[in-house]
Image 1 (cartoon, rainbow, N blue to C red):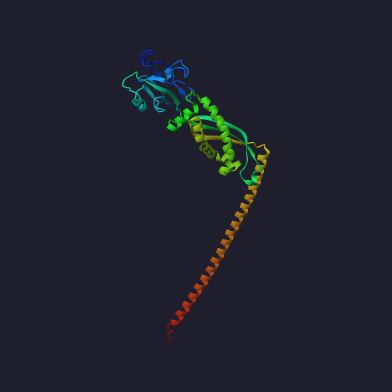
Image 2: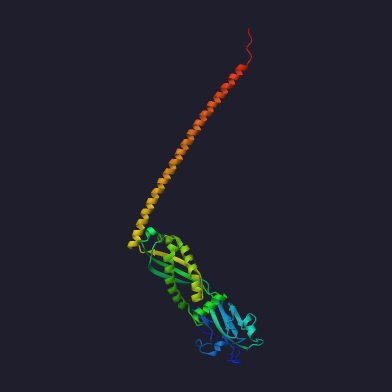
Length: 325
C-alpha cells in the first residue's frame, strides 16, 4: 500500500507546487485522502498543493475527487479507469479557478479517493427480540424472533451523496471495516424496530414472516435508505433477509401456535361445511332442473300428441266419401 513517486523531475518544485504521482493503492478503504508517499494524512501542506502535469492514476472501481479550497467546496471527479496527467481537459472546475496553460501550475486542492466497488455487502445478525402480534385476539402471545441478513451498498458520486460522505467522515481516511462496524450497530437497532412494528404497520401476522422474507427485505430497505445515506454517505441498494427464526420453546410462541392452529382448524371445518352445503345446494338445484326438464319434456310430448291427434281428425273430416259399389 504505497504511493509511488513518479514526478517529471525528482522533487521538482514550482511556486510551492509539487509534481507528484497521484494514485491510491489502498485495499480496505471507503474514502482515502491522497498524500505524498511516506506521509501521514494532514501532516504536510504538500498534500493540498498539487501541480498540473502531475501523473494521475484512477483504477476501475475508484473515483478521484479534487476538492478545491479556492471555489468554496466545488470539486471535479475523475472516475477510473484513468491513467494520465492532471489537466483541465476533463476537470472544468480546475480550469475555471487557475491558469493551466503549462505543466507545473500549482493549485490548492485536496484529493480524495472513493471506493466505487459494486455490491459491497455487510452481513448482520440480530439476536432474539420480542414481537407482539397486531391482532387484538393475539396480543397476549408475544414471540421471540432472530434475524439474519445482509445489506448491499455502494458509493454514489451524485452531488448529494458526496456531501453526505464528507459530512459523515470529515474528510478523514475511512476503512470499510470502520463503516461495517458502525453500519452493523445501526442495523441491529433499526431492523429490530422495523420488524417489531411490521405486524401493525404492514398488517403481517407474526408467524408468517418466513413466507414474506423478500417483501420484508424491501420494506427494511425503503425505511433505512435515507438514514444510511445521511449518516454514512453511502447508497443502500438492497437488503436481503436470509433467515428468520422463532424461539419455538418459548411459552408465547407455543401458545400462539396452538391458538392459531385451533382457529385454523375451526375455520377449515367451517369451510368444509360450507363446501358440503354448496355441493348439496348445487345437487338440489340440478335435481330440480332435471325434474323441470322432465316435466317440460312430458308436457311437450303431450302437446305434440294432442296436435297430431287434432290434425288427424281434421284430415278425416275433409276426406271425400268412398264410392258405393
